[in-house]
Image (cartoon, rainbow, N blue to C red):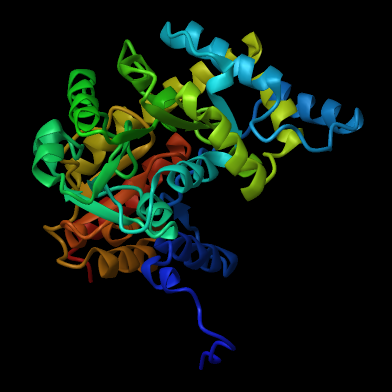
Amino acid sequence: MTAPHPYPLARRTGRIAPFHVMQVVARAAALQAAGHPVIHMSIGEPDFTAPAPVVAALERAARAGHTQYSSANGLAALRAAIARDYGQRYGIDVDPARIVVTAGASAALSLACCALVDVGDEVLMTDPGYPCNRHFVAAFDGVPRAVPVGPATRFQMTRAAIDAHWSGATRGALIASPANPTGTSIPFDELMRIVEGVRARGGFTIVDEIYLGLHYAEPTRTALELGEDVIVSNSFSKYFHMTGWRLGWLVVPASLAATFEKLAQNLYICASTLAQHAALACFDDESQAVYRERREEFRRRRDYVVPALNAIGLPVPVTPDGAFYAWVDCSAHSDDSARFADELLERTFVSVVPGMDFGVHEAESHLRISYATSMDRLEEAISRLGRYLGSGRR
């Protein structure tokens, strides 16, 4: 029995749901600790870790005593390196003064919502979508307005959806490309139309590009091309394989940089100084070669797992073109994806995430499967799932 709270909680806490994927991960870990051969296809974390030059840079920084606060918007050298990378990778000129280094993309999006969302403001986002996005808005007493999307739009936002769902209370849109949980991207011409539609209404557009480095199409383009008023978030977690280092960034309009710096000073002082020094090595030639090789490995896994899932009766309605997720239709096997995910974990020891974590639109008929694990593990997982689904699930 849960003990009563000693005092009332803020009402906003009731609007923020648990992060169910972490409960799935905990249950899978418990089974694994009990000796069961669990294959983890649930958590959105690369199986790769930071390459050797980044680890060596961390060690040097620690020995040099670089453990004090940095400026709230990050080390000047790191902001300059990020800006240079935009130029080299995407052909875009970004003033380092517009870059705010944050404690991960979560802190970046929280900071953006703090700066832009007032009480009762609506922010449009997709359903399905990354669950924390709606909670970032709710944490600042805004209203996340979920827009149902499906295969016809690659599970992505469109200009037509913006036009149809914008209301007098809408302040802006928070979109992701490539997206979690679907791994799909917004075609760049459509992204341009979305930004134009939001801009015409005086709203803000935040584009989460945390998976942009793991986009498999060429050429890859950043939303920063679409104007200085577009706010972009990114992170060292996914492409750079530094999830636990908690380091990300925002690119904001020059006119708002001082406001974001002021908020960062007060909300978290600065991102980890050691992590920032280490991240400088992410842009070295040796590290970049490692990242390119690993991106191709993720593409290879995608090219295996999507047809394999289709073949065993777990169709992927839209092939992902980025990240390391497949959004799987499980309706042929169950009308309750949460119960079905539990069943698969208990019977096959394959851990997947039910759709309920990502919204309500057709959540009961979908699973998210992460292919951020080795090919041999993916092949074994497909084999287990295929045998179980083909056996009549006794």
